[in-house]
Length: 433
Image (tube, rainbow, N blue to C red):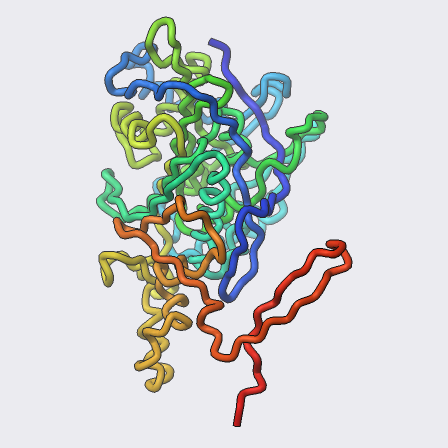
């Protein structure tokens, strides 16, 4: 089958408006996934129980040597792959620095080459941009909130649950962060817009505004690599896609621009099998890269993650998690089995001010280092049928307006809203004597 290839545009961030959100210590725009209109259809069979139409297995590993020139996300109507050259140095096994704020040290030579432009008018963005772009999130929990916004936006597509948990990277045994929702998922084109950088002068109502920069900044702020599994039933087509956004792969392979290995499947109701939507060589190259640079070493392991998603939804696994300046992993999964903490923050706070020891368990202080506390106040209003599950335990929402000691209500009529009335709830600072 013909492959679907695009260089998607860098969309504007869509703030949505589904929920009112409260954030701590930083302000950031919400980012929503593209509206995926679900139709009434039976869930697809498990991929484990069906035979996928595949090429010769022996070709896959041998394809790695030529894969660097055939993994960009390009659209059918856009220039061919060969018209956008990409150079790659021989693969280097020198590990990248695992401390986030030191991992982006630039060589002066690379700084001038961070953005290149070819004859067709396309911008080539150097992989170093993935790191520098992620520095917009100073606080690691802010990056997690960015990804949660996507799941919350999927409520209008029927999402009822988002799960955050620690999993183990099967390749090296290190912790990885899992974020999964049961929303509408993404079809292959939406997946490419989510994962890719770039723009096109092609006029289309989908050319801008569907995806912002948030997915790239948030995943790359949490870890060096992220793999995305998504299943969709858009337009009565059952599709599955896997994509890898990997800073490690790009830097160790010596690429001079950001490229994203991705494979797509579509369920064929006539044959009862999953068919690839990519041309054979394109599929072979990309599956080889996915198996080499992702946590999974076999295609069966890779496809089992799609089974975990179900008929619709998105599963994000962020691995090679960053460390802080002290060399410790930023996310602490060990201190509390029901929470994810910012490593060392609580200890530093108590040392700097011993009197804070008693009040360190107050919500206003815990949200600085406890993800469970932060998520409890992240959204002011959220539908009752939607739940956030952190490490197997449901988040209990907390309305911080109830914590105001001296509340005061002010009624006013904004000019921009005609005669509608808005109530402000404030904490009156005129405390009684």
